[in-house]
Image (cartoon, rainbow, N blue to C red):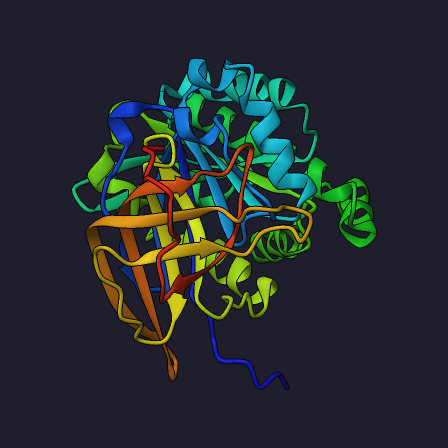
Length: 339
């Protein structure tokens, strides 16, 4: 058994719709310890990019037409190639537009292993979920409108087809009996998600998702199970001695950093990036303002999470270091430059 301390799951929302951008960093413990933050699309597609792949769970969220931007498939496949768990959330949908939206997303992202799992509608702080882990003729659909039964049936068939590609027993059962039990299908989906063989797509009806509900979205039943799966399959994603880069905003004028332990940090501190050995001059910035600071525990381990405004002394070019340490002395002869 690993002696490493538990680590919170890092959840990053890549926001394609500016209206959904949430400025604050959020720390939650339910269903598992996790932090989440938002990265605006303009920052996600602009340098500097992290030297190493980001860890944890990546959630792309926006309207269907926003997913058609040319850089979105590049971001999606970058996360995919680096082994990151991924979820697609499409907002402002109508029921009859769900299946065409799924096909459009699958084709545009060039990923045949995306599968639709649910169509959500929010009522207050609760989500009504039409999921696709049982057929349109299941007892739960008794009395439902024919259009909902058709949507559920098509979604169910798609999920089974996708999972059958990598699960021989499920494929045999599906083609011999034309029936797969709901729990069995859910467990097969979670295994595929754990192994990064399949990525879920979630549709949200109309205006049901707003920026204050991003955290609420993570409380929906099946998404909670996906969070647990991502947390368990990621293992211990340690942070470096010092600070670990999680995200940037405003062209790297703001940075999101995390450290293990209760670490003191203050304005005017100088941070040095631990970059490639071949780089003659390491990236360096001065903290001009601490915008947000959170200390929290995960098991017996304590973590510090900050969002800071920075003034760059030696800005990175195309790649930004992931590991940073506080410099006790300031570099001489260099003026801060705004990133």
